[in-house]
Amino acid sequence: MKTAVIVFPGSNCDRDIAVALESVTGTKPAMVWHGDSMLPDGIGAIALPGGFSYGDYLRCGAIAARSPIIAAVVAAAERGVPVIGICNGFQVLTEIGLLPGALMRNAGLDFVCRDVALTVDNAQSAFTSLYAAGERVIFPVAHHDGNYTADDETLDRLEGEGRVAFRYAEPVNGSARHIAGVLNSAGNVIGMMPHPERRIESAHGGDEGRRLFAGLLETVGA
Image (cartoon, rainbow, N blue to C red; front, side, top):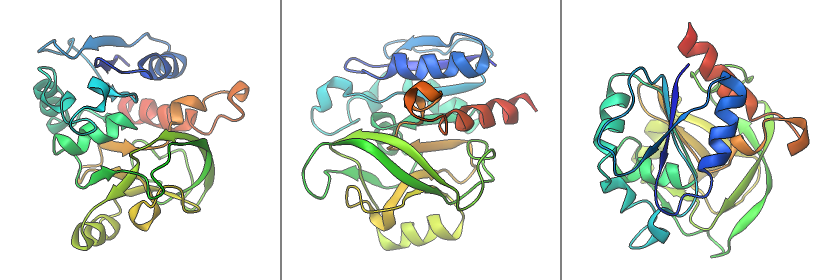
């Protein structure tokens, strides 16, 4: 499967996600610069990495959301191409409207950087098919603006439609209803604040994150 990683000025997790994708798919991803206007042909999945695009000026992800490449990413997502946004990538996905809600400052206004426990809410998406519903997994987090927020109507809709992929098993950042990962209505776009790409082999302390990428590969391959 051919994949692409979108690289913005200030990205600092683009290489992490690239290593994870290559490890699982066996193929190096295309590193696509934000100023490009087109994606390479035949891309099977797109990743928006974590980091601090444009130094988080104005609002996290707000400037990146206006990059030339974004139109191609949105068009691909609308065609059904899987898109994953991690940390800052999640922020970008909300800014461009592929996912609802917004990511606000953490409740304690602190940068949170540690391993956290999550529970799997939806085990039937392309990204979560290799997990069991209710399974407890450990992923690292590293964020200052990771407090997922939406109005009650939106949160009720996300839960009712099975679009909450992961929840924090304990309070982490004030996130509404402990939501750590959200899917779009079609199930081919996911935003996550934790970093599955940092937990894909035993040297990382565990490989729970690998199953997210392996599930995607299996689904797209099928």
